[in-house]
Image (cartoon, rainbow, N blue to C red; front, side, top):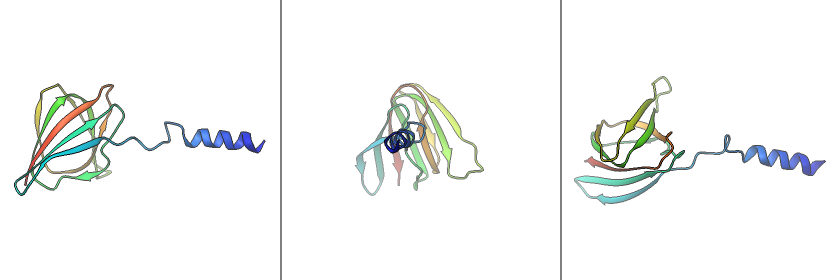
Length: 115
């Protein structure tokens, strides 16, 4: 009986609905006194985790577009859904947020922040 309860408890804890979301991956392409360039890869279902962009001038180029949810740090704020095509570039202001890939495909971006 104990083994059945233990198995059910283990299955519940490891269920996808309760597990921590997988993080996106990032690679620093360039970082000097003037600029920071990072490639971010978001497989479907991954997210960045809450983070802050310190520099006010930021351009995001979508190597592979998709659907992202931008979740603000302020719980009172409203999430923004961003649907972007391959090759699209957007300006994004400095912000604290979490980025979630809520689409079905991998999203790859190159983010450039001017320091």
